Length: 571
Image 1 (cartoon, rainbow, N blue to C red):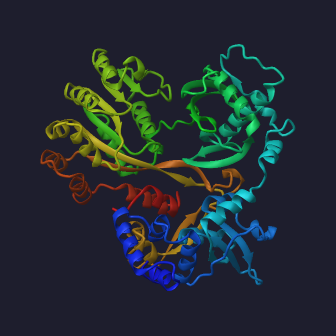
Image 2 (image 1 turned 90 degrees about the horizontal axis):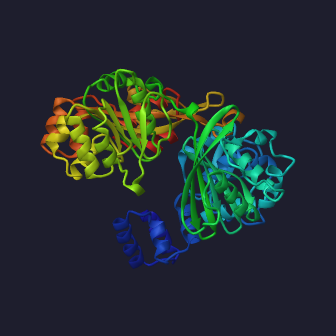
């Protein structure tokens, strides 16, 4: 970056004083130097990209309307991949061995992917502005809003299966000729989402139309958008299905729909949010058939799984599963209580909301608006003669204290916390005011987890990496390979019809399971930091971290390097 600053000074874009000021701001805010200089108003985006290109000995280009890219060049890289990674294939060398791409960022992982996607062509990047790339994709999207609606949502192309989707126990709903298009469009959106294994549907209003996105395996994918004229009728149809107030457009609303499609019932959770361009709808799809209740299929390594199974048979104590939203914590808890469920024990759960109904388990839903909170539910549960209690999340001190007391009085409590790693759960409980000796006495295991996407087995492609390069990136190859290994075989996501050209099918968990050994308990009592506890668990108790577990799945060909880097950090 020092060289970049000097180039800008040589080009008379900034002064030495301005560079020093920017470096001070950079150290304070931890932003990239280019962003700082642009935010301060000293340079433009084009100034920065031209200087960056010079510092990297690359060519700088502008993407304009005059740029014509041959169809055969466009088709080398799948459109969705190019759009997602903000790269534009612009030309191929005469001998066909080199692919030239326009990009605003230099990402070696993407370049390696492109090499294999393009049939082993050499990849030569040309730097351009991110603004130009965004403008290009806006102007050269596959179809305009009207074309997309005509092609996908028109009467002629609506799937016949759309009529097979029905609302279970739906009351009389007017379906006049004016409403029929919205009814069919909403049915089509839901049907396609279920077929695509989507977990969420996002309908987002903007000035020129209504964008549609599906969340598949944890990642949002753009779908053909709807024209603005259909926005209100589509939202109204969803509200009617969920029995919400169609006249209320100023306040958020939540509801649920149960639909039947392809001989199976699916729950939909509806969230309506007013925005400046209209109401946004997010639909969570809860398919009971997709719930994995087999612990052995979650992704826990065999050695750790044996420890986990042993601890969940403990008659009392607290087991915590930690991780960010959407990391699979609830699925792990559902699988756990299904494993230990029997007619000999009384299992009760309090959830917000109840996502899946499990036979033989007493499940209650949190209703904070009427005072039925996690804490109040826990108090009631203790009068219900429970053996095992599952609490959706420990959010506050009151809930934590009641859970601790329940564990002390002979109950097994399962719950979740939002922390980054397993040791962080201890710090979080301490910050809530729970005494260390109580944590040490009741906590039996802390589990951290993340989800990585699994490679599609039909289209995954091998790729050779330098072991030295991987190790420099923080990828410890010694987990799988001898120290003198020069080349490592990994796999990348190519994409095919079976995986909707994403290259991935489903997700699997990466786990960090910290057992409460005597050493860990002693550190808790001593009020040791989360870092000290984690280091002890790794060095003394041989705990496998999330990064280590993710690497095992990487080297086994289950996932990709990008996924490992996305969900885990260096130990």
